[in-house]
Length: 457
Ligand code: ARG
Image 1 (cartoon, rainbow, N blue to C red):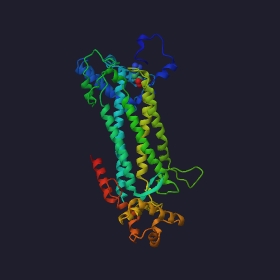
Image 2: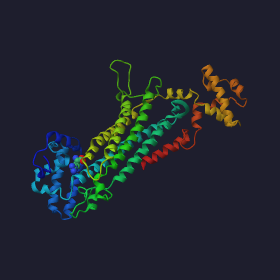
Image 3: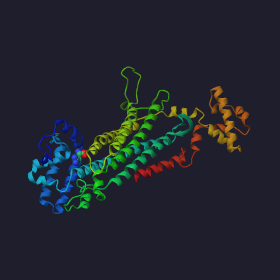
Image 4: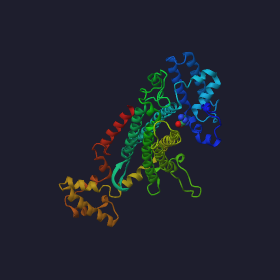
């Protein structure tokens, strides 16, 4: 069933129909399509382009169609080539000639541009809510783990001790920026393309500002050619989704490392891990691995759409239909990953003792020994060299800096007293770091308070 049969004398070849059709995937736009059509007829009625009575009849029938699809009473007929054709065909089937007036002053080009914007805007709101839930989980864990000590790493080698709250706080910042990006995009895209027509506007006296208002946009888009061919907002969202996935993937990598037999920093909940068909002892971090793996496919969507758009002359071209499958796939993937990752994180157990023990090994307090010497009047560069000698002594004997005797310390520098042990204990090392953004208790409490304020705002 086509809306454009008049000019044609032969039917579309069946393979061409299948190649051309988007109904299989754009049927998920039905709610946005109906919302846009109702706003359109309301505006047509207000402007006297159709009568208010006709507008009422069309709007009521469209609402009924939506209810019927929602409730499963009506299934989208894939004999139509896209969701727009299906809607109009179904409308005319229900209310006859009045339904034929729906498409007055409109093209599928501005219609699909509107539907995608509405869909992307709804998605942005859902994603924002999912990110907010993840941030709440992170904040809860940060509050619980202000004194759960662990090694901080550089080059994946133990560097200086931090706390779990501090480590998780880094991810809080990342996902906070992600929300900011989504909200910036939402603001930039919030203009209504409906009324742009096929590309050159229309001769009917449309009130585009009114339609925009009915659909909660900040106003109509300005240039009708741009309106029907702009997909920048999808590129922007896919770019933001790629960044979210990159963050989730880094976090996943850490979960996988922390969950390994060598680290045992965490224990994943049974419900969020899987076993092996052959090795009975296995408890695998599949969710984290899949999140890490699916990152590639979201990046792929971004590349795919950028490439699709790069050669398209103004205005609408059918290439643009290719925006849908990649966007739907990447957006579903990303929001599912955010949600699942959140649930996995919320149910993970952290092995405090193992983490703290690990923080105490690996010379994570070497900088603090140097700082101790600086406190006793030795310039930092000299102190650095002296501690290097102490570390070498420890490595030779397979012990930690905390295990050296006072005599050994004094053999390197006589300024060292027995207060050295307290000064380089993991807890002391962490809790004395109170510059803004550092892991010490005072600094961490200020950070947590700021995170709390942000989430309340
Ligand atoms: N299915 C089309 C798309 O997704 C709808 C717009 C069709 N417009 C046209 N002139 N063929 O882009």
